[in-house]
Length: 472
Image 1 (cartoon, rainbow, N blue to C red):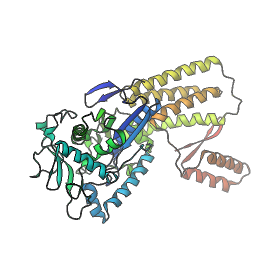
Image 2: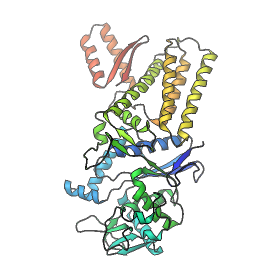
Image 3: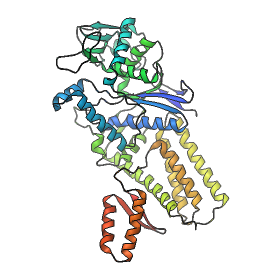
């Protein structure tokens, strides 16, 4: 494997070399759980799921950590609006997050640490910075001295003088300099709080990721990822506080995905154009959302519109239909297929090897999912041509299904049956029962089965091999 990654830190592609052979430590900033995740949040969730899948597919062991920010100004405001506690709000939206990522075909991270479960580690981290002179207490707050870290600005490639007014923290007399950022916030009356050496309060936004990443993945990460909007100030501040404490690089490779626009406009609350994942999966197949996210290179901006998502749905339909046809041909095989010739299978194996090599070459080049999807469509074309022969050897069908499974294990574009769906064998049994009911002119039972299958989004089609079915 020779994966190259565009490193935001160096602004260049670099050959990926994990710290420990055979293992990868990857940290991706997760959501602040005060609301449902929106379509912009879904992009890093889906993309880094594919990064993780691909690295695992190459044989690497991936320790994948995605945090939950479960205490924050936004959670406090939401709790006040709902008449609930901050932990109650967090628990509600963490549950919703898991539902949404499951719908999107995203595998759970190795760990999802919560800020509120790591207050001792965060306090110890801050205390270390204070002891070293990188941070100072002021009226119950603790701030990081940005001027004390010579490389501040190296990730976002900006000069510290240009950054001083861009930090997303409250400005006031408590800070030595406007560019200093908060590590610990003194509690206001009635707010959720924890005891600390500097008085009751709660962690600032940036410190939480540094502390949790260090606890689970060590002083230096292989990969740190997130949306482009996190590069500054969040990730820049993480670099400063982590490297000041440890004296080591915080992450060897930084990856940032581009923005998602809605109808060519930046998504924002002020415009009221945010779309939650929970809303969109009611209207669009989740696999189409996943396809939409992966059909553009992760570093490029994306434009979400009715047209782009309709195109994604059409593409997913083509992929799913081809795979379903292959599975149907395989399931319908009765051993009577024509004997395969070595030449036919050798030619097919050669073509499949070429497609898979193309797929891996594109994924190894900074996880080029658009070209990897192109390779998948070449597989679709090859499969459709092969199936035009109604007597095509079943060995070839098996090879094509295996190739599909290998590529989709990385991309995750094929739908998985949910717990509410009928199992394949249940569907097959109902089809057999319906056929028998029709033969015996039991039209009521045949119609009942037809309605049940239709309710479960099962489409029946007549083929030369008999009735086949697929999920809508």
